[in-house]
Length: 618
Image (cartoon, rainbow, N blue to C red; front, top):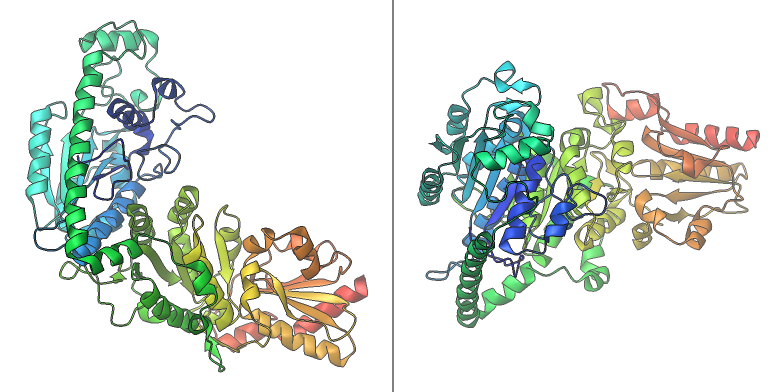
């Protein structure tokens, strides 16, 4: 591999992903030997509190770890995204004799990774895209926690992967470095397909527990470790954490080769910058954050229509504005681009015939899509988004969680956000998904009420440095609201003030904000004055000062009603013991959207009735 421990962020380094994240000790050992920042003392703190060597590799925590892995198969999916990024950036920037983007993505995976569905989705996508710089090494030891893989996994993996479009190779003896090296060189020589190398190994090799399931997660024990070292001909078998000087010397020479490789690349890039100054400027723009202050005051960015519009359509407008502001914006949908409104006009389609395209077509592969987007942003140089119907966020959840853990600002576009989906019925109508995503740390869940709030959501997404954003958008048209503003960036704000002494507060999100405003008008006709608070993003609101939160939701006003076409879970902290909700109590149904909103109580009349009952109770 080309990598330089003295500069772990070298742009043209080869990437390595340990999809079998439970084998983290192997990765930490290599990082230590190569001279990354892990010391021998760090190695001794393996899996201990506050150590740099946690049980699974964590991106941003341990230098040299390219991705957080643990959920099996996820590393394969993220590696596919990295290979996509390499192919796209190479297509955008490489010139004859100037291959400034030219590196491989390596993966080690195991039986468990290949049993998980995410790996099949990801391998299928990689084969379809012919990502020839992707090389996967399959550690095939035929053992899982419960015993032999034969009890649950008997398929011919190589035939499956070959059917996906991979070159398949086999190393019969995983301890034969010459055989293994030859297979890797054959993989590098393949120019039309990704490569999958089955490496046959023995779990617990050389120990008393070789080829047994107990060697997977149980310590060998001190006596067995000593016996293992003797069996392998190791010097000083009784000593722990003993590494001979010649081993360090060997790895130091390998690390020096990496430094030399980077130095040669730096010279190549310097000449490239002189010869192609406009491309160098574009390269810098790809690798720099968007100018948040400029975007905040860009009138064209915030210009909104005056007619009703679905927020998914407003989002589509914003994507096409952003594509000209952010040349590194790239993204797509799980076969729902026209419905999600996520297609960038005149930006080309990313495919094996055109890696320069910016529109990604993931097919119906939500698991792989979310993992690939993690890989795209982890690679560097690109800002990805992905999309599907909100109810199918369930399929993305594991990789959204990993994005939050890694603090990477991927954007998720979730449309068809409520029972407004209508005739598609309860299978397609999200009820509990808002609560699910809001429960996750380090994720901004933004449900916009109109075009202005949608713009605010996209502003939040593309300027975020370390938090992913989920944009929750409607299928149906919504009115443009007079009080809607950039204050949506505070997460919650007064969108319509009470016309007189405020007796209560209606808190709503998304399509229900306009309903709350209509209810406010009806209440005013009876001299009951309430304010309406739009709460597009609870996470942002919680980040505001206590003074601001009190100004929006004064403690003295106890009559509060939350209005949202989803589960009421999570609203209690805003409505208090005296408040109430107009929310979903169960699943939806199949009928036109207007019929369902009336059926389940999302009408101005019902909101008025619930607010009156709260006021009477108080």
